[in-house]
Image (tube, rainbow, N blue to C red):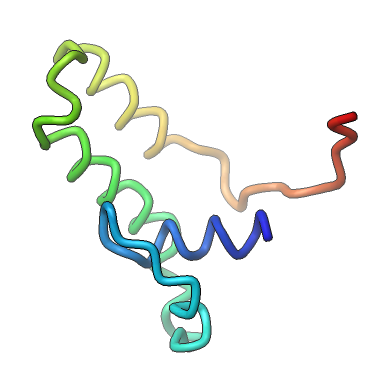
Length: 80
Protein backbone atom coordinates (compact mmCIF):
# COMPACT_ATOMS: atom_id res chain seq x y z
CA UNK A 1 0.00 0.00 0.00
CA UNK A 2 2.86 2.41 0.71
CA UNK A 3 4.23 2.09 -2.81
CA UNK A 4 0.75 2.42 -4.30
CA UNK A 5 0.23 5.59 -2.25
CA UNK A 6 3.54 7.07 -3.48
CA UNK A 7 2.58 6.40 -7.08
CA UNK A 8 -0.97 7.67 -6.63
CA UNK A 9 0.23 10.86 -4.93
CA UNK A 10 2.68 11.49 -7.77
CA UNK A 11 0.27 11.02 -10.66
CA UNK A 12 -2.95 12.46 -9.20
CA UNK A 13 -3.69 16.15 -9.01
CA UNK A 14 -3.57 17.90 -5.64
CA UNK A 15 -6.60 17.06 -3.44
CA UNK A 16 -7.65 14.28 -5.77
CA UNK A 17 -7.04 10.65 -4.90
CA UNK A 18 -7.74 7.96 -7.47
CA UNK A 19 -6.58 4.59 -6.19
CA UNK A 20 -7.15 3.16 -9.67
CA UNK A 21 -4.81 5.57 -11.45
CA UNK A 22 -2.00 3.05 -11.20
CA UNK A 23 -3.94 0.78 -13.57
CA UNK A 24 -3.97 3.46 -16.27
CA UNK A 25 -0.23 4.23 -16.20
CA UNK A 26 2.15 2.97 -18.86
CA UNK A 27 5.86 2.30 -18.75
CA UNK A 28 6.37 5.65 -20.47
CA UNK A 29 4.76 7.42 -17.48
CA UNK A 30 7.47 6.17 -15.11
CA UNK A 31 9.89 8.90 -16.16
CA UNK A 32 7.58 11.57 -14.75
CA UNK A 33 7.38 10.13 -11.22
CA UNK A 34 9.88 12.48 -9.56
CA UNK A 35 9.03 15.57 -11.60
CA UNK A 36 5.33 15.05 -10.82
CA UNK A 37 6.11 15.06 -7.10
CA UNK A 38 8.01 18.35 -7.39
CA UNK A 39 5.31 19.94 -9.55
CA UNK A 40 2.55 18.83 -7.16
CA UNK A 41 4.50 20.29 -4.24
CA UNK A 42 4.95 23.58 -6.08
CA UNK A 43 1.23 23.69 -6.82
CA UNK A 44 0.37 23.00 -3.18
CA UNK A 45 2.81 25.64 -1.93
CA UNK A 46 1.35 28.20 -4.33
CA UNK A 47 -2.13 27.63 -2.88
CA UNK A 48 -3.75 29.43 0.04
CA UNK A 49 -3.24 26.31 2.17
CA UNK A 50 0.43 27.10 2.56
CA UNK A 51 -0.07 30.72 3.56
CA UNK A 52 1.40 30.01 7.01
CA UNK A 53 4.75 29.09 5.48
CA UNK A 54 7.35 31.73 4.76
CA UNK A 55 8.87 32.15 1.33
CA UNK A 56 12.12 30.65 2.67
CA UNK A 57 10.29 27.61 4.04
CA UNK A 58 8.56 27.05 0.71
CA UNK A 59 11.86 27.38 -1.16
CA UNK A 60 13.47 24.92 1.25
CA UNK A 61 10.74 22.35 0.65
CA UNK A 62 10.94 22.71 -3.12
CA UNK A 63 14.75 22.51 -3.11
CA UNK A 64 14.61 19.44 -0.88
CA UNK A 65 12.20 17.74 -3.26
CA UNK A 66 14.30 18.66 -6.30
CA UNK A 67 17.50 17.41 -4.68
CA UNK A 68 16.01 14.18 -3.38
CA UNK A 69 18.33 11.25 -3.92
CA UNK A 70 16.76 9.12 -6.60
CA UNK A 71 15.63 6.51 -6.92
CA UNK A 72 13.75 6.42 -3.65
CA UNK A 73 14.82 3.46 -1.55
CA UNK A 74 12.03 1.47 0.00
CA UNK A 75 12.51 -1.39 2.42
CA UNK A 76 10.91 -3.07 5.39
CA UNK A 77 10.62 -1.03 8.56
CA UNK A 78 9.50 -2.22 11.98
CA UNK A 79 6.95 0.28 13.27
CA UNK A 80 5.95 -1.75 16.29
